Image (cartoon, rainbow, N blue to C red; front, side):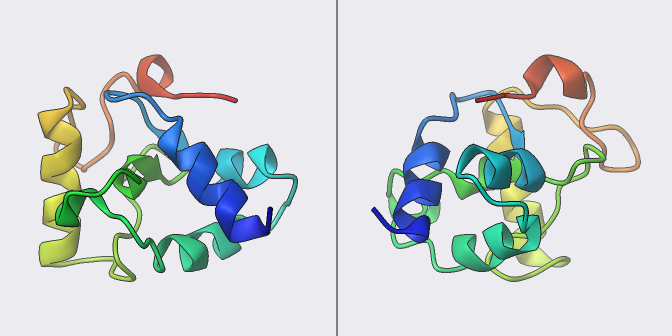
Length: 108
């Protein structure tokens, strides 16, 4: 299994209503290059947005903020990511930081 396959397999394991950081996801596949995780996720072949089963919207930054989505760090894509997370029960404060971050953080 190659690195991309490992990443997408682990992303599928993140339960609804939970999030994981890019860094934690990188460690779960045996690498330290968490920025590479973002590059891999940009290639998501089966996003929830197209009725897929790889919930890359559940990957967030280590500080509890939303991070990127489909290669974007602002705009409509980020609003869609936020709405997907909110539909799963994740809540944000006025600074777009996850409320109760430690309670919704998934670890492998």
